[in-house]
Image (tube, rainbow, N blue to C red; front, side):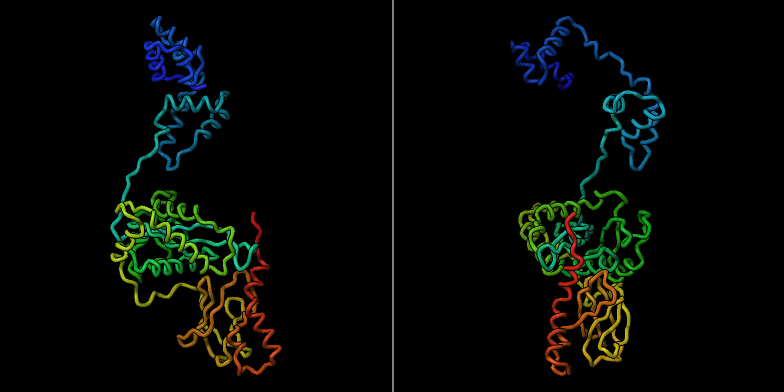
Length: 417
C-alpha cells in the first residue's frame, strides 16, 4: 500500500470539497477507504497525523550514519548502503531491516542519493574518434555448430557517429593496432585524436594530461600524427558515443542463426546492417542522418598516408628449409620451391601469416591460434606442374591444403555456455 504524502493529503481535501466519496478518492490514490477517512478526520479537527511525529528506531544510529556518509562522500566510487547496513549490524548491534535504514537515509540524508550531473558535448568534424571492445561474441564459423568467440573492435567518429566494426579472434596489441589501421581505411581518413579506455594495449599509466601510452601504440600514433586521449578509468560516459553505438548495432544483429566463412564475411554482414541503420540514425551535431553527416565529416578527415607505418606484429626473417617450408611461430608454412635456402620475412598480423621475399608477397595463410608443429600446405604450390610428384600424392596434398582450416575449426569448436 503506498504511503500518503503531502500532495495526496491536499488531493483528499480537494476531492472532499467537490463532494467525492471516500471510496472514489481511495480508489484514485490506491489506498484504503479508512486511510482517507482518517486523514479527513484529522483535517477537520485541525490535528496533525501523530505518526509523522513518531521517532524512528534508527535515530540512535544517526551519528554513526552521519560519520560514515561523510567519509564516503570523498571516495571516488561511493560505497553502497549495503556496506553501511553490514557495518551497523556487525559492529553496532543494528537489528532493523535494510529497508528501514534506506528510508531513514533517504529522509535525513537526501544528498547521498543525488546523482552527479554532466554536460553534453559535441566535437568538430574530423577531430575525434572513439574506440572500445565488444568482447567474446559467439558466432558460427565455417559451418553450423562450429561456435567461436570473436572480439569486435568498435570505432565511432565523434561528429557524425559513423561506426566501423573490425573483428579478430584475439584481443592483443597486434589485433588492437591492426583494427585501427583497417578502421582508418574504412573511414577514408585520419582523425586528429583517438579516445580509448584504459586498456593495457593503449595505456601504460593514466595520469590525466600526462598519461603514458603503451610504447608500441604511442609510436604507431605518433607516426600518423594522431594524439591519444584515453578516457578516465571507470568512466564509460567519457566515450558514451561509442558505448551507445555498440548497443545500437549488436542489439539489432542476429549472428546466432548464420555460419560465416571467415571474419571478412562477418565484417561485411555487420557493415551492411550498420549501413542501413545509418540512414535512420540521427546525428546530434547536425540533426541529420548519420549517413549524411558522415559524408560531410569525411571531407574534414586528414588524408590517409601513402603507406601506413609497419604494424608492431610478430615478425621474423627465416630461412626456407630444403623441404620448401618456413618455420615461424611454432608452425611450418609451405612456399614455392624456388625460395629454398633463401631468407624470407614472416609476419603475423593477428589474422594471417604473410610471407615476403624482397618485398614481394609469396604466401599467405590464415593464422590459427593454439597450433604447434602444424604444417600449413599451399594449394598453389602443390598445383605447380613443375613439382615432380605423382598425381595421387598431389591430389592428397591439395585435398589436405583445402580442408586444413576446416578441420582445425571442427576440432576446437566450442559449445554454447
